Image (cartoon, rainbow, N blue to C red; front, side, top):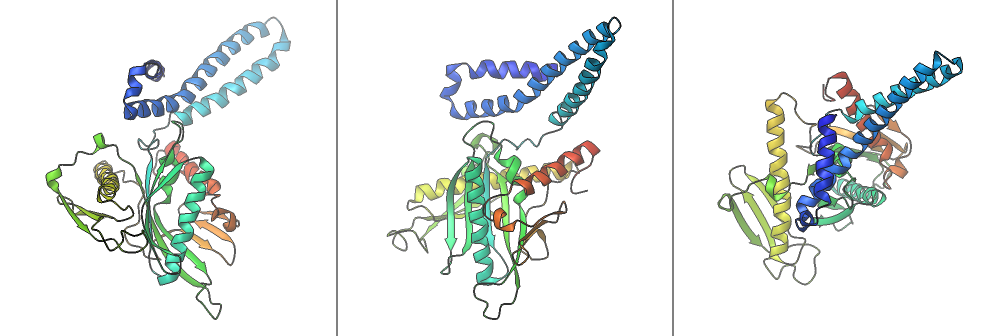
Length: 352
């Protein structure tokens, strides 16, 4: 605690310096850290104060037994604060305060899978709206029926205390849907899937990319996009040669904008790969993300006939799918966060 309190003071002092805010990235990082430390310092200060009150009450109870109830109340309060502080001091995911690159891709199931991917996109957009986050569509490929083949979003916080990754990191994996497709004439229930990849967005300073390691190809866009579609080479494909990572962007009408968006996604993918490798070396691999969009590798099932949402990682089940698909993800995500906390308290990992 003394180290954290000292850090809290240093960060607060830096944030009060106008020169720091000339560097938006630095100010943003400091603001996030200040927001992380604030509740810890506040609870620690309250705990110290209540302990002081308890010592005084214990001295008084020897002279006046009426203070016994006060001693009992303060002792109970200390237990509550110690438990709260323990949770606040649990090891944090270093990415929790980062913004997120979120990708949704149709998988098995043809048109129905693309329509479901579109439903997931709307679910995340509405959830972000409820949270007060900003969302930027970096790339999108739609279908003739109004579905989504693939979409890439940048989800960003508007305030330092809005931890986007802390909430959306659980979304990575295969999402399965069970319902009667709009294209089904005989009313049979079909099962299809869509894949979601959630990546913490990397700052430029976190991922050093040598321009010589990149191969950049340009080509003509396809699909919705205005007059420039199929007339200019505005779409960009970036290949990171050492890792073979490929990112394609065509949503914007200018080659420069597509290249910038592609670099954001590339940095996020390379950061995630590096963190995965480091975690594997430490025998503490991160929660699995979607690798192949296979219906058997599901993390969550959306059963429309039963109005049921099920998260298979923690056994969560609720019958308010209509609300969840409209952005009410709070209970699902809270269950996953609680499972993480319980695992940390038990000294294990959720995957174990």
